[in-house]
Image (tube, rainbow, N blue to C red; front, side):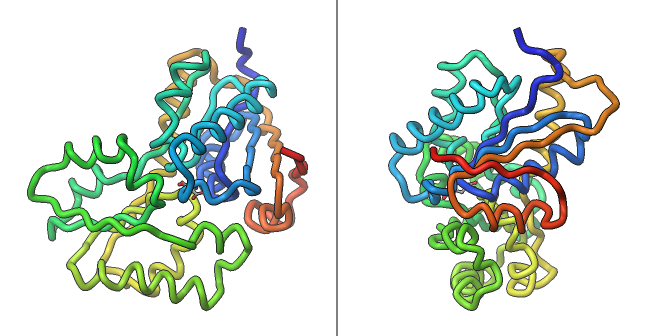
Length: 263
Ligand code: DGL
């Protein structure tokens, strides 16, 4: 029996999924949340499918033990590699996040869209399946954002290394006439100011954060699981490495409690 007051569980390989947590808590301010950041095992994007599945199972079971009424897989890499298995193994609704290449394909005028994502996402069967549904005239420039997640997890968003890597990945897209750039990793919204400096304002940046929050609301409504109180939700964070970086990214001055885990 799931109660409406039970929390929404959210997990990611690290702190990137907080970009989704922010969208969810803005859209659903009365919901309780539990966020699990498996930073010790980040990045997932360079791991094998089986390793990503095993870590996703471990994260899911943690959130189920905490009585979560729904689980948001706030990680493109975990969603594209593990969500089918999670849905068939656990009796709880799952919300996933996938790169927004379909919306980008509908918007592009140059018929050329770019996507920056992890190796695990870009090589997954689920991503291939979605790509194959795109109109044949659309060119998708795929780029693996190797090293980006590790730098974010290390608190090096503003580093020279980050600027250089982003230039290396994005300049070829600009030169190839991309007019929509899909951010296919929940860590990347934290890079938007730097990305904009590199690609300028003629390329639209597309990410799936708000769509995931809306879908979470929709599935809660459909299952009669929305929290009907008028009190602000309570939020708990669990992390197994680099607590300070999570703290600086969610709200340095807030009194949200971050729990350290040996996990
Ligand atoms: N936030 C994860 C994603 O959306 C990062 C993956 C990783 O850890 O490499 O794909």
